[in-house]
Length: 129
Image (tube, rainbow, N blue to C red; front, top):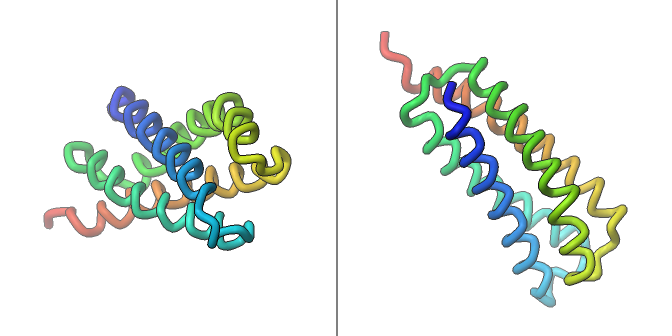
């Protein structure tokens, strides 16, 4: 368990989420919330796939490590997103703050579940018998 890699994973993912959210907010054809947040979630999944591959490249892939990665990165991203990203992005993009709290929680749940599944799947895939 490498907590330095977990912090790098979390900060990279948080910065990616913030940049994706900011850039997509200026696309005029994503004016409906469901299209906008669906696009954000899909792009976050792609970014998380590559970050999980990077994390589990030198770490032992297991369900336990996936849960630890998911919980710790979810907590770090929630704190950074709630106290830094949401207030700043609300002023820039004029999207409702209370609406973003719900989507932030959904993104946090997505992060936890994807990290958990990545630990499980990479363990099954790369385990040598």
